Amino acid sequence: MENLSEMLKGVLEGMMLQIINQKEVYGYQIVKQLQELGFNDISEGTVYTILTRLERKRMVLSTRMASELGPPRKFFRLSHRGQQELSSFWERWNFLQARINDLQTGVDQ
Image 1: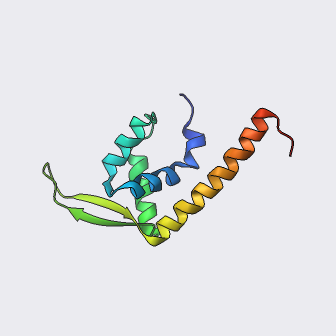
Image 2: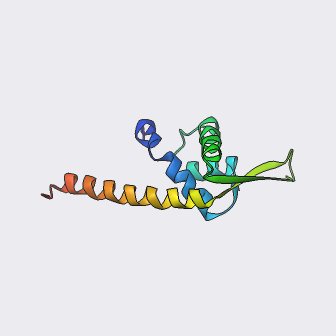
């Protein structure tokens, strides 16, 4: 689907928190998972910028681990603060999704 990037900017951080919540991952794994979901326009640079921001906000913790191919990789996992933000993200998402569905189907409030 084209022209999703502007809409996606507001939810990409939450999507990444969800991916990290599923298992400890490194940045390129996040990129690949997003691409598998059909978000092919998301660049590695965007993902790494968000990871840096999440780390600065102490929502993710990182650990360097040896890699079989190349230099050590930085693996990310959610912190307690990140888990709280993920929960809040899904609450906001569910609220927004319900209102949009109501609007689309013409349900009166």
